[in-house]
Length: 255
Image (cartoon, rainbow, N blue to C red):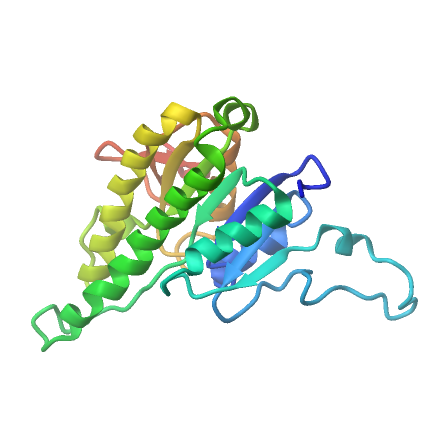
C-alpha cells in the first residue's frame, strides 16, 4: 500500500548507529522511515516499541502516529537486500529517498603490512561500504524506479550515500581499507547519478568529518535533508570541512 500521508518515504540503512538513530529521532514525524538495522534499533517509536502516557495509558499518543517501520537485516548476507526492498515496497508502495548509511569500519593501526589484518578486511569493507549501496540502488531501481520516470521527477526521488572525508584524504591510524572503500563509494555515486538520470532519480554523497567529535551528528542529518530537498546530482559534498579538490560543501561550513 502507499504511504497514508504526503510525507516522503525514506529507506535508511544503518538505522541503529549514531547517525541513523539521530536521523530517526529527529525526522520520524517528517518522513515515513523504513529503518534497516542489524542489531540495535533507533530510539524512536516503531512497530517494535511505542510511547505510552503513564497518566493515561489508554489514550493515544500523537507520536505513535508516525511510527518508524524497523526491518532487522544483515545486508551483507545473500538475499537480504532483496528482502528489504520487497518488504519496504509492499509496506509503503514507494521509496522517495534511499540513504545508504550502513558501514563497516575496522582500522589497522599497525599498517597494511601487519600480517594479514588488512588483507582480511578488504572483502568486508568493500562488500558493505560499496557492494550494499550498489545492490540496494540497483534493486530499488529495477523493482520500482526504472519505469516511473515522470513520477520519480515529480517526487524528486534520490539517493544519498554516506561517505567520509577520509575517502579523499590520508589520515593516520590505519584507515587504508576504510578510506579506499569510501573513495570507491564516491565514484560509484557519480556513476549511479549518470545512469539513473535517464529515469529521473538523483544520487549524491556526503563526506562528513568525524562525527560527533568534530562535526555534530545533527549537522550531518541536516546535510542529508538538504540534498533530499535540492536538485543537485552526481556530487560529493563535504560536511564540517571546507570544499576543495572538486568537492562541494554543505551546511554552515560551506565556503
